[in-house]
Length: 207
Image (cartoon, rainbow, N blue to C red):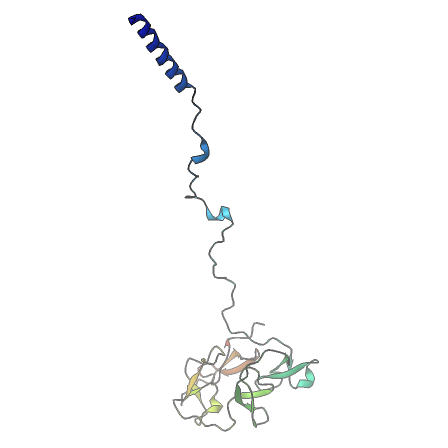
């Protein structure tokens, strides 16, 4: 009886051992997905940060059309305009260019005040503003001819923007003459210490 019981127990243990050793390996269906940490964004089509263009021009944007004295010197669909009344100081520009809708006064090269777009005067002119000087000392100006004193002084006249302004006043100017590039991209000769009007930069025009 005891022998029969021992043999039964031995067969039972042998069967359990065989079943455990033949179980299939665990499935890979539940393995953790690989982490994306440490992946270079450039490998996934990411773009880098934008950088400043070292070739970006630092000066004002100046007109570059052919020089002219009158609109007759320009091609079809163009008009001769710009600051400066000396020969060859006008620039031919397209009549279809984008212009602001504001109105500004200009002193024309004929000595008469006219109005035009603040960005496109449509004619040559001596300076922006009425032909009769009406600014007192201390008022902002872009040209000495706007001032009762006849002088627009200060360091702010360089740049050609609406904020590149001097002030009406009186200053002692040197008698030397230097070359300046005007806001119409044409050269002009003025006192080295008192240009007396707005200009793009000191020196000859570069293009």
